[in-house]
Image (cartoon, rainbow, N blue to C red):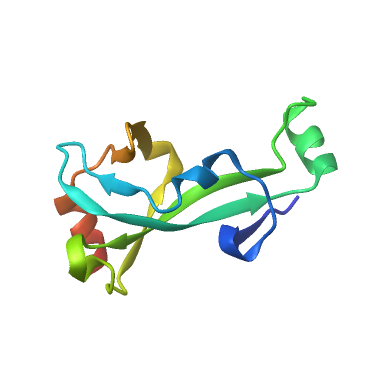
Length: 112
């Protein structure tokens, strides 16, 4: 069984996390990290989903990563640096998303 990943913006899928597009992401301490500019979604056929999970409620499309443009304020809008943050480590906190990681750790991943 194979799954395929796509940029959400390149698809016509409906995905529960699509309302995260444009939201600000902050770290666990509330320090701004950046803004969600896209999602990476994983797609599989309904038959594959049923076979693998043995449930009629199995997913066929799900967001796996948020593509976050790093930076804030005026200069953040023009930043080309992006980082992938796993959807599982982001949580809705009012109008923004809070990451389980801190901004320093995420910046280190960009430097690698």
